Amino acid sequence: MEIAMFLKKTALTSILALLLAACSSNAPVPDEPASSEAPQYRSAGLDNEAAQSSPEDAQPESAGSISAVGPVASVNGEEIGAEEFNAQVAMLQAQAQLPPELLQQMSSQIIENLIDQRLVNQAIEQSGVEPSQEEIDARLQEYREEFEASALEMYGEEIDFDEYIAQAGISPEEIRESVYQAVAIEKILMADGLELPDEEEAQTFYNENPEAFTRGEEVRARHILVRVDSENPEDWEAARQEAQELHARVTGGDDFADVARENSDDGSAQAGGDLGSFGRGRMVPEFEEAAFALQVDEISEPVRSDFGWHIIQVTERSDEEVMTFDSVKDQLTRELRNQALQESLGTYVAQLREEAEIETYPENIQ
Image (cartoon, rainbow, N blue to C red):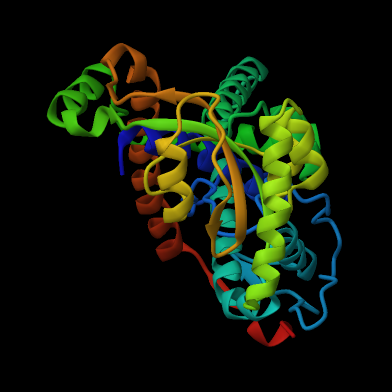
């Protein structure tokens, strides 16, 4: 993976992990974030909106889902109640849109994550570490700026951090508590001897991995999709004719974005068909070949893919370039620090587990 995309993805997954922590009242720090690929054009829908559902409900609503009817674990005499487990399930359903079958398979992992969160929360309380409001404000602003900048680069649109967490059902108090806990655990780990990488180490990494800092050729494109859900040749021909009519409109002077909003069968329609910037290997082959063959502002003839017929317009192009150290040093240093923190946190939690009295009650999950 090229480092440019890696850094953008890391910024977003780090913030999203923080948001997941905020969804749980006893989530002290984010667990290691799961890999989250940038949106790829692999289906007819490209909705990136945050789910509106709140994880506060005690019982998941989806039929066939799982729920706890009693405590799911005990950590050093403190119970992890059904409401905490159910809130995590509801959050995963709403934000990650996981099906009930997968949630059932994940129930034991959800419990283990809650145990880790409770262990770290107990450690913070026992340590007496109390980050100041100034430290919380500074870290929260750092998260906000990093999230918004990375979202703009990856998706080609501005996503307001505060609006995003509000849509995710997370209150400002919850996000501040999560930041408080993240700063506190960092202080504890550093007091235990953790040394975080600095700019000099980032420079060394940069020098030793020159190929990783090459940004490949990219285009920014928008499209209009006439979707075809049938294998019937007549349906494909009817859709092609519709696409040809839309093509005549956008090449005849009609505004491309307006036509996309009114007629495209893709989730990007609400954004005027805009798919943001992408490199090679991100789209289905037919779409990619057509898009990279276009010049800026040029509009393709209808292009067929497994999803239907696409009318594509490239709005920006960027050639391959080598990123300078100055342009990546801040984000690279943060990522190297985050990696060191995650490794240290894993070791620390393992030690807490060895010293803790832990019981689980899977029989309380239905």
